[in-house]
Image (tube, rainbow, N blue to C red; front, top):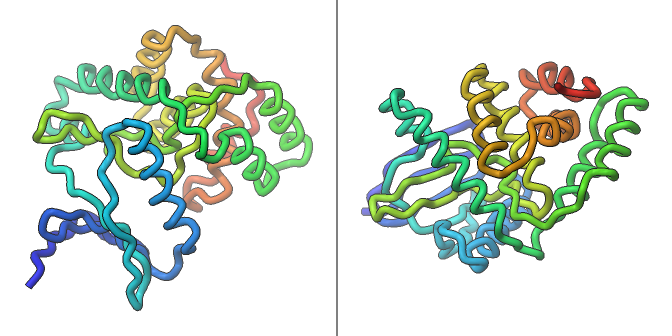
Length: 249
């Protein structure tokens, strides 16, 4: 009998450990192409040299597909922050350092960040004038070729028992401007009501990357409008408020 330990269970997705393997199981509401794209992204990032769980198999079962990968024993940065709040600043610095180092990689076969945002902006249910302005802003933003995670969150950074740091969940990975990735992380903290952590994060990111808050925040309305397309319904109003503000100080 296979030993199965459920780590996460949501209405349409389940993640569990099966012996020494981690299985990420999707139900039929997920597109096959999206599942395969996540597996391809993760494989390409691994081939570029980052510490990510190795993928061993894609399973097809009656109730959907599963990605089977190596199970990394350890704790996420989110778990470590919750366990020892006094070390939050220390863990947040580690978090930004991992993001900075990730941005040094170039994985050319990934989707382009600008192209993804352009598609999302056309789909976004926002005022036509605002949409046009955001598309023009996006076109004028510097084009970079940095590896962007797209969901860079403390829960996706694992400090392994082997002492190594691993980045997981590559479904939204692109290649583009690292500040767009930072804007997404900032918004993620704000969405969860972690305003203090959001401000500490952006200050640390700008310091370690020798960039300005103003430059990163120029991406905020673009990222917010893009995220509103497939974001959770309860987050939509919040995101659209950010998407319709022209400038951030």
